[in-house]
Length: 386
Image (tube, rainbow, N blue to C red; front, side):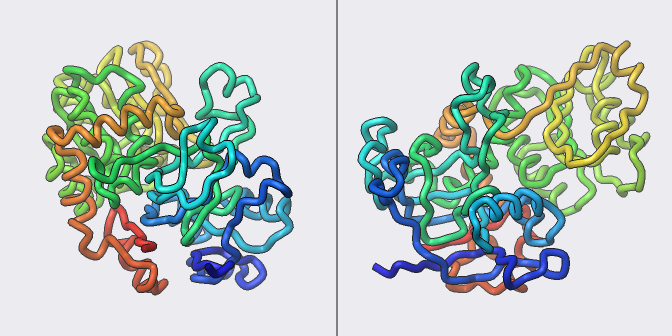
């Protein structure tokens, strides 16, 4: 077996971050397990990657508008120049350290996906069951080499088994982002409630599917992009508001009025997935008195809250969500995807991934310009490595 492999990576020795874009298809060293040199390899595995998902964070690296400090800082610590990116995967355990099966139950041949946050297990948050906000986490594809490669070495503790007989591999590869939606939807009790989803991109679409399966009474989507709006309707939104985005941080009166009318006098729950200041204010002003707002999409920077007095006096409760609860969210996600009667898995593949047409790209066919066209045209694309 060759000691090199194909990967998609950013190499700072060959590309100026501020004057470049995209990822290079390059040959890099294949990861190895060597317990004699690194005892921690006893609890690690080598995964042969089958499929990987390309997400909004990866797009941020591609376009050089996010994660520079994290990538460069980690490269400085490692003393290297390239970072293999990617953090959503489905693959097969090819090699396992001597303690990987004994301590975590993984052995060669197991099909697995992975939690993208490698937590320390020592900080207060980890020790009290809040590992999703670990103080010392490493993130696959950002602060260490990721899964846009033929092989990846990972701690067995972050892996999650995936049954290809119950979850088709293209969907199995994107359980990590699906878990974001599951975490958001399980932050509050959605049963019998009206819901507004602000932003119907990939995670917003997953949110609609998840909320419907968890018993929400009716769903309205808010989405300016026509293609995403149509997808939201196809997978189960009762209504979708199209609108023309405006500059600024204030809410859109037309959007707020329409959502409030849909809910009667406001919806019970709003889940914000777009990440814009105006969208956050739309969500806060669209819920009823005593309503709940789940915030997931917020990007970096300062935000202004419109009419904070109304939020307080109306008794609106806000929740922040990051990542997935490890591994509670994963267990719920698996059960939702394997329960075929809710049609979540079918709608992800048939509608969101359009049955793989133009959305599943063999790595052998990777061309940067064509790949960018595809991820700009679809809410989700998958890279096939085998």
